[in-house]
Image (cartoon, rainbow, N blue to C red):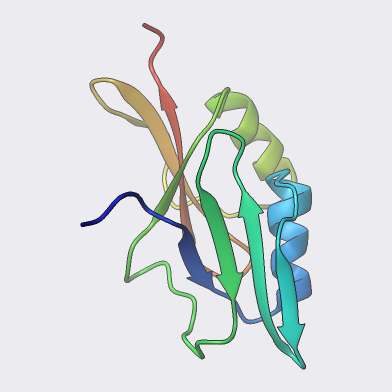
Length: 122
């Protein structure tokens, strides 16, 4: 039986560029990582649980137009959007208002979609 999602993985092309985005723009702390030549596996353990993994081992191409999208829960959506836009991060949407949340979609350095999500105050 399934127990939980072990990790979410995105394909990358440039490991250094991807690390710069996830560590310096999103502020994630580097976890387990390693390489075999120019093939990389990079993990970021999230403070509230879960793991984001990046790899170029699979040979897949990053794409904002297919596959799944990771949704990161954030504390202050408006501040994060402003901070990321100031760092020239590309957004694919304005703020989307749901019945219980607000969210926005941006692209990582490799071209993968990231959904930034904030629950409404209770």
